[in-house]
Image (cartoon, rainbow, N blue to C red; front, side):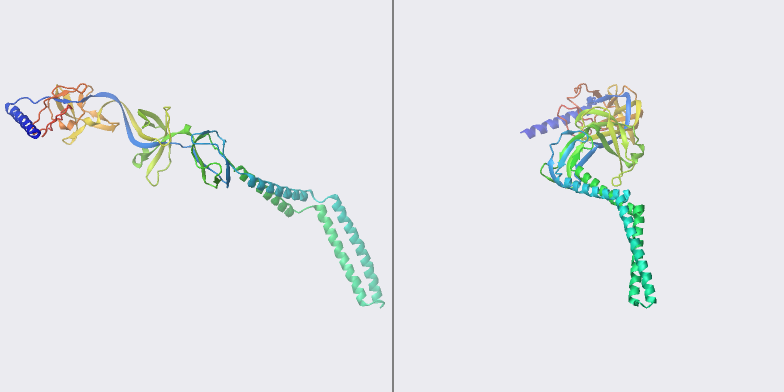
Length: 436
């Protein structure tokens, strides 16, 4: 029953449409939405994407191994510079410091003794040894001379003479040794001995410093003021070298980091203006300026990384998604229209302007497109009303009426000719005009 009724209604509508064409009745007025052309500042910008980035961020780790004995921090806690974050058990490292300290004391004492030289008591001892050796040599010399005379006179054997001669030679050698020892004692240590002794002292001191450094590394401190974003270990865990302990971020130094394609990289400079939109702050476009341009392109992606700092004081969180417009040029008093109002027809850009309740096709010369607006260089004057919804569906000279507050005349009975639409539109939205 419903199907039959619909078919009858459609047949009646098409019959009425054909009758109107046969009798030459004027086509109904089509409601349209328009935009008033104005002169306004136009910003030529490059649309990019990026994120909120923390340049000052670090993962703290331990350089020594041991049991974590102290950590009272949680995610979100704020630290000051040099605040102690973790403490590792120090018992073993303190004993290493004690051992190294004793070794250094011994080496330093030996070197001091060499620098001071022999004591007067030692020098007198050496002098007495020289005198004793000299007396023994004098006695051995007399004994040798007497034995020689007796041997020449045949009173003693050759063996007795040779024994006296051997004692003389030994006494002479002992005297030379005592004299050399006395000389060395009076001169002190040689340069080589002093150098070796000093090197031993320095080595012992370095070992002591190394032990103290390892003991100091049992305290992990914050290198700068920041906020803890992640805690990787707890008291009782065993810390190992280079294993992460906490992540620290300076939330007061956040920037917007984005990448610029290689073909636009040469146009980027520091102090250049950027406009940033964040999902966390909808409806707002925040101004900023480029603070840092990386000196080289990323070798993998062939993009140039750029960092910008925002002027507006808003809350930023690392990792926020950012839509960035890199301002390339700012032009004042430009004729601009919404991007949907411009379409191509007959090989060039055109717009439909409402004049005397008719849609008039006007060719225009356009410039750049930015933020949904098109720069019109010629063809339009301020104050014109351009159609913004499906302008390519209209015909030049078609009767139209500008909608006001979503309601306009002629909405109830648009032309339903098969040559224009091919079907009816039964809802309350503006009727789609036929193609030209």
